[in-house]
Length: 504
Image (cartoon, rainbow, N blue to C red; front, side):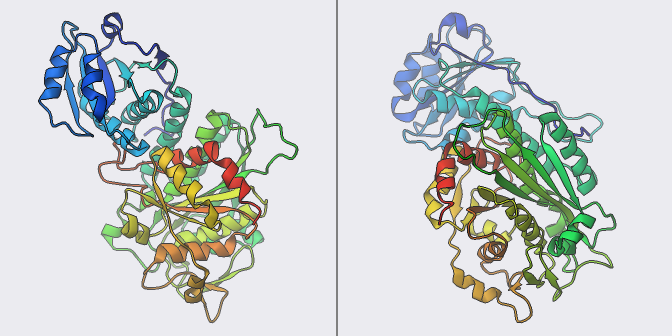
């Protein structure tokens, strides 16, 4: 099994937006995305389109339809048409692109053309993202790993409108997140994870610091250490990665870094409140939040993001053993807040509590944390959206707009302060959670809020979309990598709103 995903170079290049017979004869497949209201007119404008128009006439005339056909006297060229809604969202573009790529994938074309005569850049970007996601390698320990198709050349007929570099960087970051999350727990235990991060840090020039259990004990990170206590090995750690841009924005007073914080529970048994077999089966993916933080860091590094970033990965296992933490324990977190443990399977918020408090010591410009934290969020939203929570309600529009633009949709939940009344503990500053699980996604956010200073803008993403059977949008894999596209879009396109919220 490969240690890290293989580096993939993009074979995509932009060319003139006109389709000629000469250009089409050099392709094995052509993917065309057209808006519903103009579909017939645009298809007529393609060279030698008569047989394609017959195919189009035979299908239901509805947005979202995908069909294939051929062009007259251009042998060996498969044409796949996707009909886009006239006011399609980025999520709908990505979803349509994923279905189009699935249709052409079985033919394994070597040279693929992308064409979208109306929506140009955005539609071609969606098609390219779908091609990249479909053609990425997946971890495999089989003697004969499954063959993977990826085109050797991609010609984008858009006149340079699509940002191909951005698409490639985001998909490489998301691929890293998907790859790490898919690894089995004997490969990606905390020690194995640290080795992989160290290699990535050397490759990309990140400064790396490892807070071992001994160091965390000296710092008083007892919430994190309560979780790791049940492990037979002492390899749990919080990893810090610093990215500092070579190209710095010229400002009077440079901003401090944005902190990206990820829950990295490499396997979650539930601890002494042991999960049943069905509930434990996929708990190797409980580190998806850390993989998203790392994938986001990679994507923004490759894009030479002009602002500093720091990532914190909370790597541990929630194992059961003679030293496992227990219900009703009282532990003191790194920032001095005392916690009454009520459920050992709520370990994610314990590990995040100290990691948030550690990140907050640096007074970052903002803090964004990622975690597969609660089943309640899946119950509220399904796996199609993820939950967003913040200590800056005025950021709701910017937070949800980033989800719209990226195609990774989030829904903002309220976090009223009176929810803290239910987390009141007779023995400690805060109870870890409620025992019945009702509204647990909101209570988890209120719990985490105790470890984030009010002066720092904070966004918590409960990744209910981290896995979804059948994939999501353009991603055909069950492990989606959700959060990389979202966070990169937020920081690239909406950073000003995030930073402006720093002064309350």
